[in-house]
Image 1 (tube, helix red, strand yellow):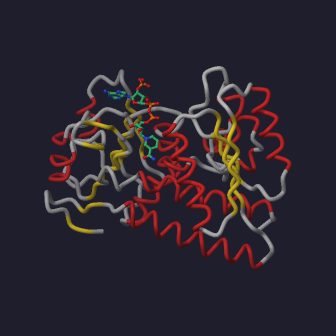
Image 2 (cartoon, helix red, strand yellow):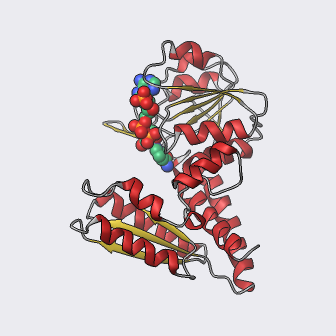
Image 3 (cartoon, rainbow, N blue to C red):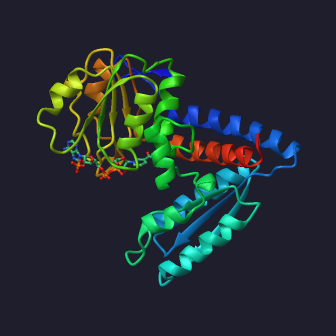
Length: 289
Ligand code: NAP
């Protein structure tokens, strides 16, 4: 972590923490291999969305670097839902595949929920299966979504214990906002979830010891709303003429926060790292460890 030249906040270095997680996973994978278990992740890419293809390639490379096996299944955009389900069934049945990830979005004629819910919950390393979501709500151990897990790991790394703190999550998507709020609740924070109909966002955020922004609107969270000393985790990833920016007005927020994630280089690098961690966990669990 380094001090921020532009303000007083400590900059939370997601690249460094992401690398630390990857190194931990590599060690775990080596231990598993020594016991004859070689963790493997299968990615399913349907169609030719260029951004999705890049994400899948990044995941493949990260798997190999961690010493895991990676199986890339690429299907044409014309593939029917039934055919994708058949592919998932095949992967569910393979003993060398411990994690299955369907790259989203899938083409419109395919219902993403149908495909995700076909994945064996034990291999649901994206944590998006209905069962994984239910376990999260119930507070029962299971596979959790990678980006929200990454947010919590960043808090842990800077020694910010959510217990008893006021946490405000802005955004209520199934992918980020809701799971991150539940993970904070699991860690005993008092959690408020805000969204597009929240009446006074500024007033809610002003009470927050921990702010997690997951909206997808550049600079929508004003720096002046941040309570002095708060920790700010900015999940937002917005392409602007100035480049990639978060949801939080960074420079202003950094003058008030005690710690803040930059965009890029904050939450972003955590997602793949936590996905690898989930795959190693799934492989260990499958082996009864
Ligand atoms: P999403 O599904 O579009 O959800 C956005 C949420 O923000 C919704 O709940 C929406 O409220 C709320 N919202 C929108 N405008 C708002 C406003 N002005 N004030 C308060 N709340 C507002 O987006 P998502 O998938 O959760 O992603 C959120 C952001 O995180 C995006 O920028 C995405 O690119 C980024 N992201 C980054 C990573 C990563 O870094 N690895 C991973 C995933 C997502 P309603 O529910 O009322 O509509």
